[in-house]
Length: 106
View 1 (cartoon, rainbow, N blue to C red):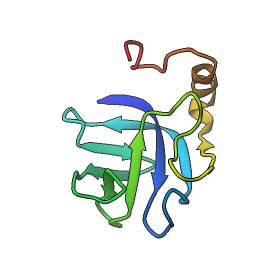
View 2: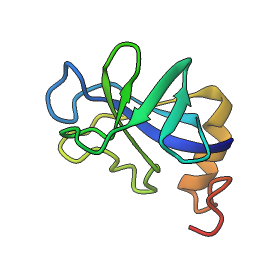
View 3: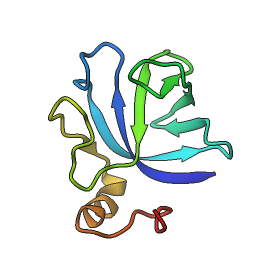
View 4: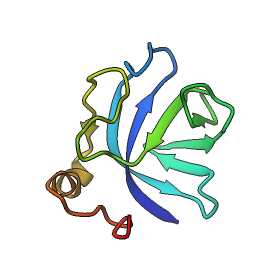
């Protein structure tokens, strides 16, 4: 299973780009259509508006993407993500210019 450090934002129940956000470790299945994060199973669904994954149990919608070095991960707000302790060092190194594990080639 592939693992990536990702930007995750909850979209359901919040105005555009105003939901809580995280920088976290996410595991993906072989097809990259299912993500496992914080005990949730998220499925990719291309037909969602303003989201690209949904929680299979709660139906909450999420946006998952690679984090940005300029920290402009949201489009229309200045929400700052909570960085999980287990990825803090990797993320801070990424902000200083290092590649993220698993993303050495882009």
